[in-house]
Image: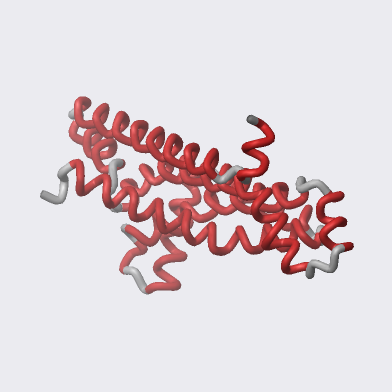
Length: 213
């Protein structure tokens, strides 16, 4: 039924995946561009990091009026408030890592390519992005783990997901249900971390992988 573990896991993954995907689509291009140009990066990173300073519960609560205003969601409860509350948590690590990753590329390599007549877009696509990709994925990995763990709070604003077990278990004093929910969230976060860690390792440029070997 609706309260089955697989249903709750899918709900949890749906809101978490959408939040990380939107953060990726917004923050990665901005971070790569700012890292390549070297302009306004400090300002952008510090503005994005304001999201880290917002308590997670407060971010979820702020998502309620935002969802009601933008989408007309009745009472601002459920999926969308949870999504809007997770975005400030997902954006900072993705943007910061994308910016830092491009800035960390060896400037001598970039200047050599520029001296050979490679365009600025070509430098970004063919040199900086391949070298920066592992660190960019590390930022996505951090964001994904944080979002999966924090999406549990969505149950407080009438969303489903694995947080339902924790909130309902506490309300009904069914502590076995509460413990099961906590363990499932932890296992899901660990699984996401391990999976993206493998992707991060595989994203290392083949030339660098051979050199390290």
